[in-house]
Length: 415
Image (cartoon, rainbow, N blue to C red; front, side, top):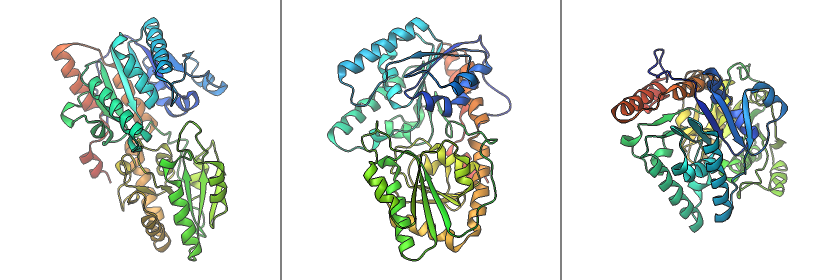
């Protein structure tokens, strides 16, 4: 985590460009990065697929938005090439000092355009590896090998910086720990503690569980449904509420027929998409995150912890980086309905764990993942002076020390 004394090097106010594939998601989830850029009086340009809504325009009136061709899954080679050429041309015209790319598709486009760009620093924000890490068909393996190769090549450049949300993704890409001088680990994109505050748990009858996520295969919601339905049929007083909607852009999105089937199963209720998430956690006892992998660090997991709710998570990157088994919740094997059932029964049998784990989760969040912490790390990164040679090496060591949120040993020592 960043310390009180900063090693950041002050410089003139830079021109910063943000690149993202989802306008709403960018303004909702990466507000601390925008606020950090505003804090240092940077000129800010955002390349986004559509203009922001009225709320975002009001909150971030200092951000110039340029509508950008959306890089889509399934683009032909020609379509991808034309979009990358447009991106390179636009960035050369804007002439930023720093470019920050979010999401895999934006990162891929930025990586391909990299040789043609003149920015002093390009920041690749890897918020999880998604399906590219999980698919095992020939196309999936080929795309994975190409993407990982691109990331390893970029890692050799002193202009390329990486932000990861867990300690595993860089290893999966094939970047050894000895070659991560310009890597930063952030525990998510930052959650506002004023928006997500703890409240007393509801009455324990039934034990109320919730999932909050996109309804895609990798999130493992089907596993939660199967576990809870089986427990209800066995006589346990437990219920599951599902929040979120399908993602048409994802090839493994859950279809409406499956959602309807879930909603008809014992103890399971589909609630749909919700904008205000804090009340969801206030109305439930435990959050379920049975992910199959590909996560960075689920925002909803941090929001549950901020609200003082314990969670049950799968042992996959991101989830297991934040939740420690038996401290903030339970960590179970991926794809294991039986492990999920056992963990849920522990909360039924030892109700005091709800409060104890919930308090520990709130403390963990306050020490690692608030919006203020994330904003501080971005501000530090944005203030760095780009230099060459030995001075650049010193600078990289400084930012690694000042902006690295938590190493594994530091995480283990937290109360």
